[in-house]
Structure formats: structure tokens, C-alpha cells
Length: 234
Length: 295
Image (tube, rainbow over the protein chains, first blue to last red):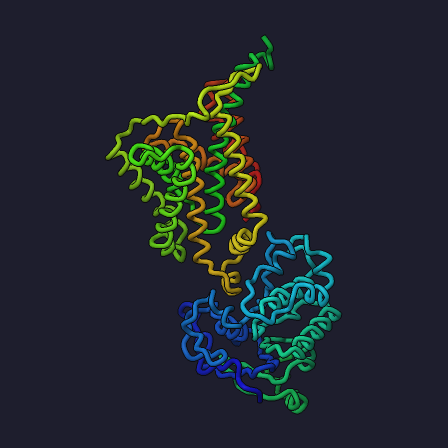
């Protein structure tokens, strides 16, 4: 495995009184694409939001590029190199497509220039003047990813990028993620769509009851299918 | 004599001008309230006090430091804006996680404290502030007599309103502000310092109120109560326009100012209540306000 970019150990998190993450351990290597699998409600989204610093009631250890992230304020997290695409996509309705695209501040060099983003997502260029939420679901997902690519972050955190999207769009997102991988981007995603995940991920974590219960490389996916189908209840 | 709707044209135009001037103040004040409410979700009851502070700072700067109107027009909003920013950073920001009522109660208490303090030192009666020499006198437009200062108030407040609107709708800072109004957590996760944005916004709202206060000083008298007199009407304006809509606040301010002025011509007895009657009707028909989106 490549050098670890993100190391999470014994991570606990709470929503008010309720304890939702019970000691999550995981590592994401530089340039890897990691997918977290698991049933609804086991804490996948919470894991991403806790790593990102959106959930502040947390204990344990999160190291990013060797730096301890637990004491870092939410508005400094992105500057450390983490970019987040939320499940609900978070496209702003009072901003145009281009304003949405240019909203996240550039945090490091090496981000994708605007022309390149428009080349990768021609739809966004065509519709750059319309309100962000007038785009279709697929276009909004593209926009949510594109605006993070501009910022030069090293780790892209994606929460269910294919949820509710047509197969042709899902395929398109897969291509984009492969392109990003070739460019050396590290990706951590939560995904319910197995087939999609198996095409892009290097390794999988399986989550249950607020913990990682197993971890395996993409090559072991076929032999684990029975177990996964049972655990995930697909 | 020319008549319009059975009213002498001069009386009509005179009241239209008064309506426009009042409307200018309503627009500037409700604009600040709308900006603050949009992002901070705080109903800023101290807005009238900040308007009064603007007028007082201008008057005191003239009395003690000899700073004239033109410098006061820039300096007083800066002073009051900074004061607002300090209040937000040290006190108001601690209330965001609580029920919105706490923000309302806090700013209400703040307004009472500021106004009480000024009443203690300066009494309730108004003090004059002279129209700057360059804007003194009036001009005969042929159909009516226009005091130059009043014309200036209408023009400069329109410029200030449009400037603020452009700042919010067309700049990067404005994009942060609009985005943070929709989803502050995500904007913060993108690396924008949202707490600082909140402080700046409150400061901007307070500065706008103070700017209106300086403009008002030569028109009305400078008195500790000038803010509480106007703020009730301004709240009605915001309700009619719809909370959180920037352009709505501006347009409604002018519209209601003019409606009030014209009522003085046609049915003077109702001029003090016409805005509240309009508010009641709007609340019945469109509870979100004329320009508001349903929350």
C-alpha cells in the first residue's frame, strides 16, 4: 500500500446524546480510491462528516498527511487538503452554476483550471449562467464534484455520488473518477452501488454498527460476494 | 393651478417627495435588517438604536472634533459598524445555537440600553444638525420647490441601496454571503470562515443603519428616540417585503414611503396607519411577504 494520507484510529462520534461511531479504524493511502460499504444507518455518512469536521462531538484520532485534524476548525479543514461532496450535493439555488463552481476557495496549487473543468463537464459551461438548482440531478452531482476539483485538495470525500442517477450518468461519474485517479487524486467514498464501486475502488471497508468490520482489496470482491450480499441484505 | 385627481399638483408632488424621502430611510434600514436576518437569522431590534447612533456620532464629531458632514457620512457608519462587529463577536455570536428568540431579546435589550444611555446624557428633546452648506437652500423646478438636501437624500440613498445590492448579488463576497445564508455548514467545510462572515454582515447592517442616521440628522432632529420612532415602521416594511429578500426590502421601502406620502394628500387621517393596514392585508394574502419565498 502507498504511504498513508489519511489515518483514522479509534474514532468515536456523537449526535447529542447518541453515540454513533464506535471506534472507527481506517487508512487511506496516497492515490488510493477507497469505498465504504454498509447497510443504511450503520454510520457511513457520519464517518465522512466526522472526518471532515462537520460533526464536532468526536474523540479518537484523525491524521491527514501526518497532521492531527481533531483540533482544526471546520473552516480550516479544507485548507489542510480535504474536499467534501455531500450526499444532498449542496448546490446553492441563489448562486449561478459558475458562482457555485467558483465558490470554494482554492486551498493549494494543482487544482484543475476552469477551462479543464469545462472541458471535462461541457454541460456546466453551457449552463453556467443559470441558477445552480435548475440543473438536472446528474448535472448537479457533476457540479458538486467539479467545484471541489478546482480547489487543489488532495483527498476527495464523496457521499453516495450515484444515488438516484440514471445509469448513463453513473457511467459518466465513473469515468470522471478514473480520470481523477490517473491524475493521482485520493478518493474516499460511500457507495451503495456495488457494480459501480467495484469498477473504481482499490479497497473496500465494510461497516456495521459504527465500526469497520472488515477490509479487503478489490481482487477479493468475487469470493466475498456471498458474505456481502448477506450482510448488506441486497 | 394644475390639478391631479382633484388635488393641487404642488401638494401632490410635495407629498410624493416627502414619501420618497421617508421611503429612502425605510429602504436603507429594511435593507440592513434583511441582510442581517438572511444570514444570522437574528431579528435585529437594535437597528433603530444603530440608526440613532449614526446621527449622534455625526453630531458629536462635529461638536467636539469639528468633523464636518461629508467626513461624518463616511466615518460614522465605520464607527457604528465596528461597534456592531464587536457586539456580534463578543456577545451575539454566543446565542446562535439557542432559540432565535434569544437573539431578538438580546438586541432588544441592547437597543434599550443604548437609547437609555443617550437619553440620560442628552435628554429626550432633539438637537439640530445643520444642512451642509453645499446642500443648503432649494431650487425651483418650475412645478415645485425642491430643498436640495432632500433631493440629495433620495439620490444618495438610492445609490447606497443599489451599491449594497450589487455587493451581494454580483461579487465573490456576496456569493459567500448568499451561499452561507442557504447552508452555512457546507460553506464552512469549503474553507470559508463563516463566523467572520457573520461578524462582517452584522457590521455592514449596523453601518447601513448609521449611514441612514447621518443622512437623517439634518432632516429630522438628532434625538435618542429617533430610532425607536422609525424602527416600528421599518419592521412593517420588512414584513411586507418578505424577510431575507434584499431587493424586496429596497423596493418595499420606497413603495411604502410613497404610499404613506400620498395618503397624506388624499386622506391625511390614515397616513400614520396606512403602512400597517398594508402589512395586515399582505399578511392575509401572502404571509411570506411580497418578495419573500415560502420558508
